[in-house]
Image 1 (tube, rainbow, N blue to C red):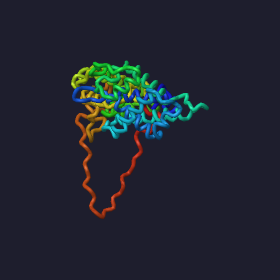
Image 2: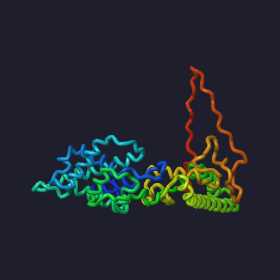
Image 3: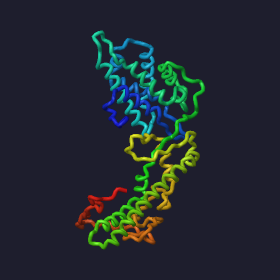
Image 4: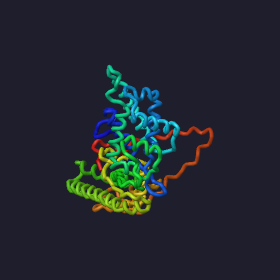
Length: 363
């Protein structure tokens, strides 16, 4: 996990704690009533209880810091979190909570690692944690957004008091932050088989372009066809992205979302790509199933067993190539009956990949 290009492990514990708690607070899930955040205050109590157990108790947790209102409020949250553990099944959100436990534990250990001669820590845990929570709250838009869509529990009131405020009486039913999802068009086309289709066609043409034994007119024709097909492939991807984005409002309405969907077109390794959470995964799945790939007439996840790339319908080329779409789909490979007992069956032969060219194409 990185932040602004730097590994999380290389960042200051206060920064990693802020980022980890922000992720815990920001993640949402889809319910029958629409999108809902997880109960941040209750989860913070569980996180603090786990940190306290790892450190060895509140004496170690608050070392170098005299008792204060902050330490008492955190102790209250620890007690509530200890009684609550183990918490509810949160699915993939559990990993986000765990990262927050690790980050907050490092923050607590930093407090005990630097003790002055007078027995005080320059990084008292209670103060460092409160500062991190203040940054989390500011990044979400204030206490009302932090607790939007959640119950006004005693833990929520304690967290609000730790932040130096009171829990708003009329909490918003939903957060206003958009649901940001990633669209990796290359990944979608790879799943549909359309990328394979273009890959093999272009690879055959590229061989003709490089073959000096062919007459120049054939090589020029292969080059022109190659460029035309590449342009057609780019147009297919652009059309799919536009359709995907136009489908987002319809999917939001179908899922009962109250926040808009924002589509980020990029790739998974892009540092600016939105983070995944249980809500964005469900939204992405719904968007994928609702958006048709222009070259196949089907959603990208409906690739059928037994179909080969050249069988995909709807791919029109401007010039004749050595690889053409078939008029009828090929049949699935027949299934062999199981061998009889006692027969010596030869193992399958592993063939080298066809995609071994050093000058392989990048689609």
